[in-house]
Image (tube, rainbow, N blue to C red; front, side):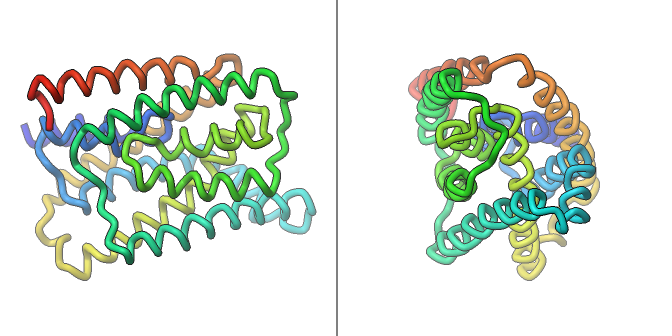
Length: 265
């Protein structure tokens, strides 16, 4: 059962990490039924999802890294760096202030429902806007701030916060907004995972982990995230994000019901 639960959690992480439905929120809920996992465990399965997106975008990353002589590439890379640095600095501050994610489902439920209506609103704005592939400096700054909002409120979803912030503040193209969100998420999530993993190592927590379980979770998360993101990138070419908004609202309302029924806490 332990390994089956590990596989289920890896699948949940892989599917939800980059879809705009919140991986943290889903994992908080899943762990109430499948058993609580350590911070180290959650870091490892998150790393699998990040690796999958890195593989998907490796050509884009390589072209940016080797094409800094081109003004357009250089500006885009600088905007990614600014968004990342805003998140890194503010994230470091809230970590030092001792911020901890709540483990109750109620904040998750509220974030899911509010986020669902946020997606519907942003889609409405984007539908009336002229599609623009450009990521402005304002958008880069807003995306950096949006990542912090997602980190503070479980259930918000980092991808949802950043994609729809970009849509609302000047990027009318879902494809451009999603690409920027995912690309800035790669260094952000590697940095956050590396920092947490280093803390776990210093605290000696790694020695307490079931390494086989960690390896299974990592592989499952990587494969599942690769499939989920490839599907999403194709889906948004011809569809809106409306289905994710509806899912969030329905799931959030269901969580309120399960909470008051005593099925979750």
